[in-house]
Amino acid sequence: MNISTIGAIIKKERESCGLTQWALAKVSHVSRVTIVNLENGKVGDIGAVKLSEIAENVGISLFSMGKKVDFIKMTLGNVNTSYKNAMSKSDLEKFMLSGKIQPGLEGQVLHLIDETPTSLVSSTVKQIAAKK
Image (cartoon, rainbow, N blue to C red):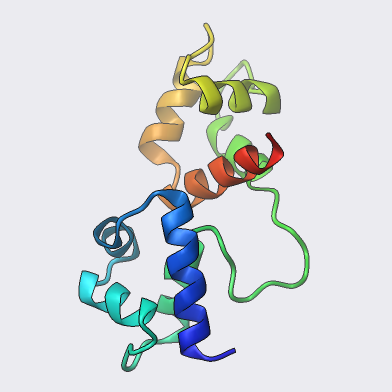
């Protein structure tokens, strides 16, 4: 796979996530020009780690071991840390689809918003949307 193909895939996934080039650049810690050049297949010298980070921020992995990642499970592991009542898979899906917080899960939702990496939230939303 060459850089033009990778750039086209990243652009397609970025657009399907509803991210602007500026937003992707910000969460990936690169300039918007870098994203523009990458999507056009004209990026100069970009390292594998940075390229992988950009890809993961739109929910794709460049270094897959052939196993699908369960982003919902990862998100639940992140948000349920240190809480007496655990948020279930169904609770997370209901919240992400409706935006309504169920009583007793306020702490987990705050943790999701404040502490969970944007790339993980984005990937979780895509996984839930793909199921519907």
